[in-house]
Length: 72
Length: 249
Image: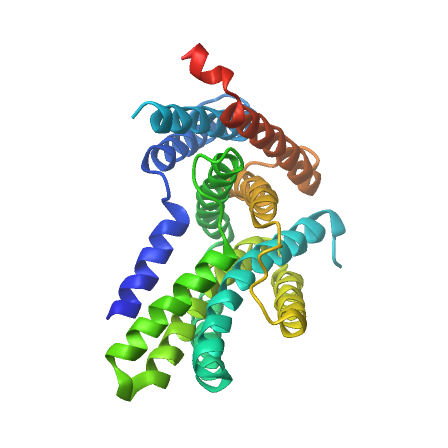
């Protein structure tokens, strides 16, 4: 049972390391999907949100994580 | 026919990611072997590899039944989450905000943990050692299996990606057999940074394809995404290391 628990923890840890970042990535993906599938805009607009939103989010998250460690 | 603009990133990502994970698994197996000999270490490792192979053989054919766009979307989202998590950790580790992965320290900790367990359960020494090896290889191997499937399945590149992973295993085993100590000089954080860049790029690519988007330049878009994530990772690392950020705040 311990092994199964460890496997489950490893799988969760693989994808959901930081809850805020996970949630934000999922929101960007949802926004991108909505722009591509639900609006009449050029699908590349949704693609651009995905391709540029995630890197910007990464920078913001690293910055926030550093601040959280330095000023808990 | 193999398209190298797609195959090279897939093989590279599988090779580098596997290198990181196999080095970590090797440290645990070496600790077991040092304390209890190679027999339980080899048995535990073999059992873990058999479990992983079983999982691949069981789940692999199911992928053929999933519609391509749904598969690309699911894999893309998971790759994006995993890749960005690796990139984030690599940025923070490079600045010392979270500690670096230290193979020597892990080796010492595993040896001490096993030594303690051995003293408590004299009668089951080899069983405990074998289970430790099994767990280490299984947990690290899960990531390798996912990455190989993720970077390979969406574009029909399972075989090249598997070869990349096997090459990494062979390389680590070869070097490990020669030096016979934890591979602490492998620049693990740099490798994780590089793999994070590639996994994130694949994640954006497959997620877009999953939504039915045709990326301009098709497979070459992967290289553009990799460049964007590389730049973001470098900016993130610089920001994390910068003392000026405290002043800004």
